[in-house]
Length: 376
Ligand SMILES: Cc1ncc(COP(=O)(O)O)c(C=O)c1O
Image (cartoon, rainbow, N blue to C red; front, side, top):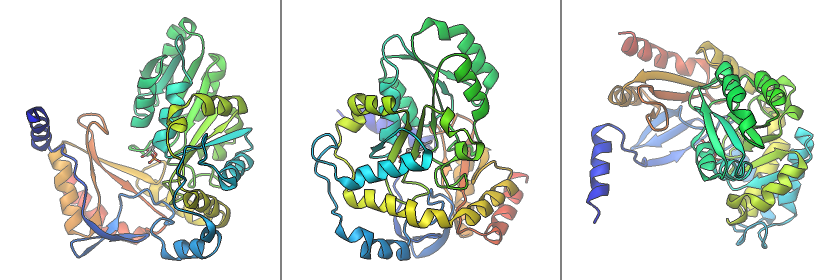
């Protein structure tokens, strides 16, 4: 009965594709510990060092966090809500100057909820080819049709819009701002121009940019002064904020619609109040102190030729990528091989994510190793 699965796993192993959960013993803001070894953690989304941070955790639990419980026991629309949930939603509205915000349990829930519900039968979604799996899964659940345009190719998107837009009623363009696996940034100005010209909604996933870009840390749209041009912005609390959860923020009508139609919101127990309070506390108390550190991190990214704090080192084949991670491991760096289907076939890579804790000198040996092993 299970032969089929065994065969699939064997094939994955042979292709160096098999995923395994690691045996870490501990983590802090900068390092990860495995088998008695301390490694510089270059694989985390803990961009500002707030997760696994003893000072921050203790301070929160002894002050604002002390009164919150660890379970909500219901979905938001049942009894799984308290003032702190609405306070966090109001805070996001205030920061973004948007009409409405809805919390989701994760970025995955948010993207599945938004992308499955916005386009109905007769509607269409245009999605960047490298958009995150959660966006793709959402579109696949949608009653609408979807097209994927080549990554960041605005000419291709316009061609598609010219050819297809009028065949549908409502249309959505969806893109990440900072792309999770490539670290490059969407041409948001052009996306805004196209969404206006072809009467589409624009949904932007700022998962990797929220907490990192912009004076207030709101994302790339803040840096560009384009927040009000975006119909719906998705942000996550599980990455730079060091917490868990996500939000969609934008027009009130869209938020009211999501409350009624986004199944990943409606049919799931809401996050524990303590997590909601932690996200709020970090955004209010810690995020405003990070601007200079964030700028320094982005400067370091530039030195690695990246537009962001995410630096892809593309190796190509799976086995060579795994080998390179092993070499880095032996030298005190924790990196992970990123392979298909997460990235396109032939572009297996090491995805280095910088954090504000990582200094330029931490990366010297890594650069040497990469130079010797990649360029021969
Ligand atoms: C672009 C993007 N959107 C959404 C998500 C999902 O967010 P979460 O981890 O909060 O589910 C990720 C996670 O890696 C992501 O990279």
